[in-house]
Length: 263
Image (cartoon, rainbow, N blue to C red; front, side):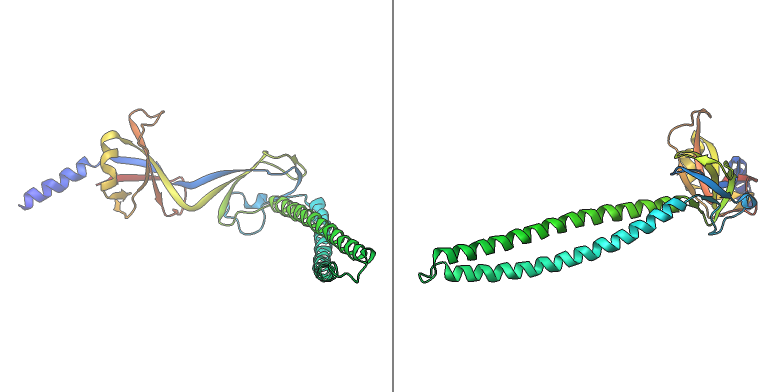
């Protein structure tokens, strides 16, 4: 019986195919500019290092900040004017209600002349027209306020887009230098997500069918990792092989070759 168990273990170990993969950053991102601006600063000292909250690229935002201050001032002024007009509108509505009630009371009175009735009616119509003018002004101010708030959001985004930061990412490469003028779409840098790592394998058709039900061994040690992604279509460059990705904790040093086995 023991002999049978030993033979079985040896068979399993011999049948387990070995794969080798490099522990690479989970993702390497190309960072392109969203704006047209002059580059003022690049953090060359942090290339190859993990970034903090400090921006690694800063672009000129002086005019944006000046315009933003102007827009904020206009928003404050328009809001106050709008509040005044809303109060005036409420007051005019009360006046109209009172004049309407007064006109309704006298329009059937025979003791009131037609001239007096017409005067009351025209006064009511005049108040209504004044109220409509205020309503029109309120609508115009509301549209103006919306446009100003949209412009404020655009400027805030433009300023944010000129101060690039990526806490927890590695600054893999800078592709611009200070004094360069960039346009939207210009490649600025590459950053790497090293908060986790991935192993990319190319499995045979048979292994691809069985791998997800097997335990994964890394460098001979049993792990709790599973295949996170398995392509169902054979790889175009590696015929009859199926790409698989395993996400693992970040190693002490990336790009090291690791032995992967499925048992």
